[in-house]
Amino acid sequence: MHTPVQINIVKVNRIVIGTHNSKKKSEIKKILNGLSVELMDLGDFENPPCVIEDGVTFKENAAKKALELADFCKTYVMADDSGLEVDALDKRPGVLSARYCGEDSSYEEKCLKLLEELKGVSLNERTARFRCAIALAEPDKLLFVVEASCEGRIDVEPRGTHGFGYDPIFYVPEYKQTMAELGPEVKNQISHRALALKLFREKLKKLV
Figure 1 (cartoon, rainbow, N blue to C red):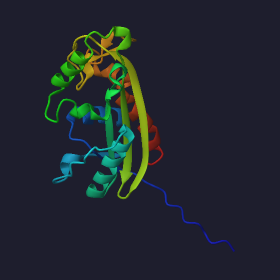
Figure 2 (figure 1 turned 180 degrees about the horizontal axis):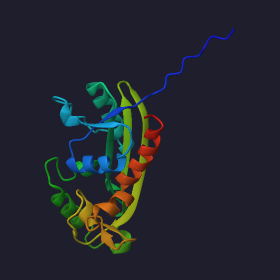
Figure 3 (figure 1 turned 90 degrees about the horizontal axis):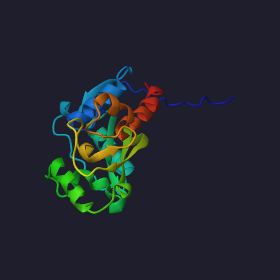
């Protein structure tokens, strides 16, 4: 007589969004809207840890943040790491995108630093991409990580008022506009985070 095998099935009914960035949270909520899962705010927890992003890839940083925050929150946590790779700068700023030219520098300063570094580089050689990795973890266990990217190039000057981060200098050839000139309806279809969230949503649907 065979002994029954117990199968542990993950059932996710609430997820903490592991970021304090209000614009990121807004994008996440829009794209995950309609799933039978409660999206909680990291701000609902007292003194959550500030996870040190010391990984060499976006995937490593996303996984580390999700695991550490899941251990703290005692529930499921999704966390992302994303950034900009510029080919002419040997893929900089990469995983240091949020800390480029200093922890406390504004994104306006970061964009101007990149533009200064690319002076004299032709438009055809200013190819770049946004990358995003999103991880889901429960305490002591990483469930999955998804990754996506959006190709474009760095423009010669900032343009547009939508979005955030490096959006004003990231030109999308297909639309002949920077990411900051595109409205949220378009951005939430083509951006690196939007594409990664769609992959995340498909995997999450199997768990909720």
